[in-house]
Image (cartoon, rainbow, N blue to C red; front, side, top):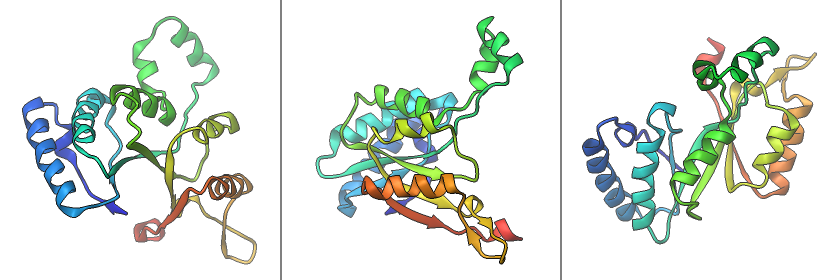
Length: 187
């Protein structure tokens, strides 16, 4: 699995993004990779990023692009629901749902079969219904973050029951699971 920073693909300036897409297209072709992991789209430039990724996808034949997304879904508090109903656009933009971001991005990329997902599993998980949506999507890998682990009574790292059942579901669906160890998490 190759992971790289591709900030120039998310540039606000479309010319810079277009030049970056041409360069990335050539780099991907030269490496003969099966898949390349791209960073999550920033919400403010999701449309431009999707356009550039879609252009790259149309030029690729034997490779997939995997978009890395955090597995999260923050729900608004009860008093915030009233604000949302009253068309408060600022609050709606603060609500994070990685599946909604994925769905928007996928739509902008014309539902390309070469576009897949890599999920970052964090310490908190969304609701069971939110998790279930992902099993119908082209999730190819999950990255288990260090912060997802708890410490048991004997001081050993372990996973919560929800994390354990999620990983079991991933294994049943032949989804690759990678462990990401971060030194600064224990500093």
